[in-house]
Length: 261
Image (cartoon, rainbow, N blue to C red; front, top):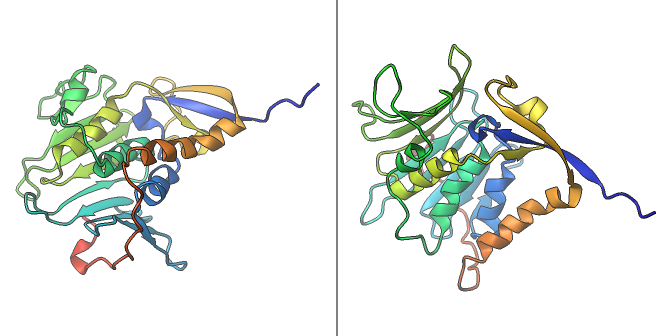
């Protein structure tokens, strides 16, 4: 008999916003290999810095126990001031990738919805029962609002929490001038009811409470797991109509490009 194909135990987690962060390579590798972003390498620093080919956007991934682990900064443009987006360590990479995929799309869909609330309202997200602005997920574990504070007016905040004490899991932030279609790409991925795969969920899940998450374990061919990222690279690379330009050398970010708190 032929040898049985090798398999890997994969957990499929729903809702996806409580699935844990996942593999950062889902975001960083396609930016470099499919979208031409250059990277800086410092073996003495536990961080990744990626810069867009036009040097207008900068993505940082660095461990910060007191703040956001992912930060995306974009320089000002003739029609838009500089903007930023940031994500906590346990923000699922599928949600972050939705933003970077939309940002790097060479032919964005002109008819894509620009209202970040719209994808959530279609999935029965509603204003919180205790009052206030924004929308809350049906299970009460995720909340989105647009800030009206003087400190950061117009910014968007998305929070995932667990337990009766509303223990924070992650927060995503989008500055006031972030293009709306990028925020909508995030909320569309957030609203997606499909589970996401995790191979290390026992260690990474923020909660295993069966009342909060559904975890379905399956045996998946190892080759299928290993090829998922390559398939993603192929899909993103196919969006380009011409050859990929050589990435420009990475510039060091200026001091005012530091992390937003």
